[in-house]
Length: 183
DNA sequence: TGCAATGCTTGTG
DNA sequence: CACAAGCATTGCA
Image 1 (cartoon, chains in turn yellow, red, brown):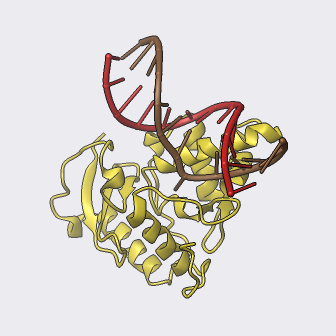
Image 2: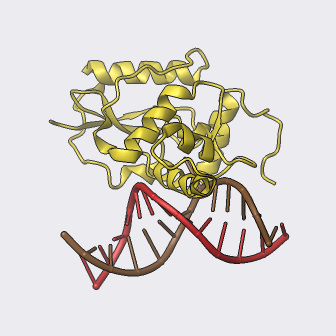
Image 3: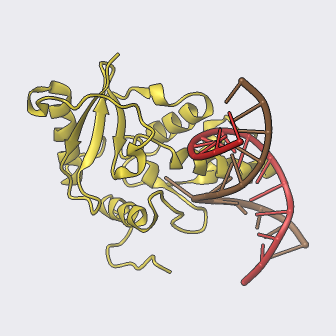
């Protein structure tokens, strides 16, 4: 099973994305260099414009960024995730749509892979935080729609990552463009 | 306002 | 392979 990489131009503050596809679908998508490391390496796609998968990905992403598409509806290859991570990511991808958000704790609860006791909730939230931080499928799995119970929460990649998260949430209308969340 | 806890991920030895 | 440390957090004191 081969993994092929290609770049996708985006209007994101972080610049173009790196996307990897297999015969099954999109296996990885990194907005910045954050997730790029540690992901399965593979040859660069010779001519992305001639690869149907790459073309579709670019098309969908472009429409999404333009606000014309609510769901990317791209085939996803989940091989990088397993066990609880897989459950959480799929739950997130399946139940949290464009323009809506969910808290770390709620997502953990909804995934059902963690205990449902009140104390396990805090721990589950951290676990989910870890999982999101290592999520190799930025955008395809809406990691940016997961927020803290009392605010925005964080995002991988430091300041650049936060900027990206705000950018995405603003695009989806979750955040008012003028609202200052820096506090 | 500040701290302790709990599980999963990831980086070394 | 085994071990240890850190979190994109929460909830209570």
